[in-house]
Length: 634
Ligand code: TTJ
Image (cartoon, rainbow, N blue to C red; front, side):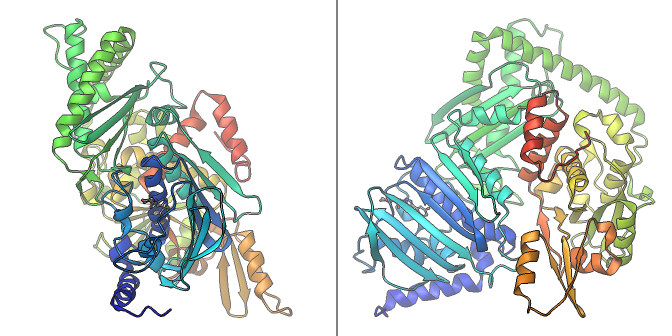
């Protein structure tokens, strides 16, 4: 390359800056950051769909964790730019912050959270290749660690247009490795499909012998999303209510449906970003809902003059709702930058929602009656529960002074450093207690199946010994008194076996956390430990492997005459204290996955399905997961 001019030097300096401080650009160099790279690329393809020039995006994971993303849009322009004298597409992939320039007027999918652009992904990839289908030609370029390997060249002819990006995250950057989590990618891709009714998006994992593919396309958009979340619940009326509106360039879309359950499930998005911490769109919706239902109940004489208004919690009981707003300049606030802060959004959502909803109730009085009946039930239960609480308030027994006997606490008093391991089974609990670092690691063994909180009343939940032990150990209190800032550990690590029972217990625990410890999930305090499946020992050194494939690969790589000792761990209980420390607990060598609120939400959905009255989705699920669900104990 003969282009050692000023702009070239700037490009190289830019790449160097990204590789030097990757965290500044993608937030983290953990596994989270590895997945982040995919979203950076996928978001660009979706932007082309949103702009109306494409309708399909594909995502593929290939062996060796190479990712391929395509769209069928116009193809990134390849013409030589005046200023740089380089093809436009090369600039997109090599100059920082070039990302926004080619997105036209559509909302960036990535909004305020990331959107740092393709050049950052390129800089953090061991290699990246593009193929642009445009002008009847296929253009190709390859980069390594962001550095151009060859000028853009035509490599063939084509009869369509589109963009293809192939890349592999650089192991030298990502300290937890680069193993993509198929489920994590699929969950977000499905979410994106629900949020974009024009989008067809697929994900294929080519790493297993039998590739796995899922294609998502929901012409019903967020209305289909509500139906999906309510799939295994009893709904109070058949169709989710759907509405949309726009004011001052802010688009609002809402879908909702009541169930006979006791929880509210409000999922909100701003510019396709899941706003876990809520914000002004949530509060506008809640205010509008409470007011609209009270007005309707008064006007139709459901509430008499002497009756008190319904409270917000009454009209939200059993409600599943999704809000998706699009804002030209979203402000993200809060601890995890997932709280929408734009104050004008509150009144806009409130107004758009209540206008549509009031008209809907007028036109559908039978649905109105069902919603009011549910609110009456909720209000009655609320008043009864309050009375009951006043009686028991004196002693809930969850004070830290009553730390559970089974807890092996740590000696440090620094919640930020402290870790609580929830361990399944007494023998694993014993090894964990011996193997741990007593300074900052606490162990709470739990026995057998934990209570399924979906089907249990609050007093049964509070009477459950395992659950009490967990909340007492955490020190956060429970229910209305829950206070995440009191958490005694900032890592809550679920450590279960890698088998069916382990998965079941983890699901039950996640359901519990999703319902009753949500702020801890939101704060990023919840993790799953990842014990290995195999140990291969040769002399004094051991290597730990996670799958049959890895074992095969490793054994194949050994010299022919070696005879390593292979141990397959059936459960945590089989490891001695040293092994457990080395493989699963030692911060230097272990791997943890952070559990996101989406993971927990999915666990909750699965739980509802497995426990629900509806047999056919349960059968489907068990068949789909038959490779690991051999015998599930419902
Ligand atoms: C920009 O305006 C002129 C026509 O092409 C527009 C464009 O850049 N479209 C575009 C970008 N389509 N697809 C992309 C894209 C797709 C992926 C998968 C990744 C990246 C970085 C960009």
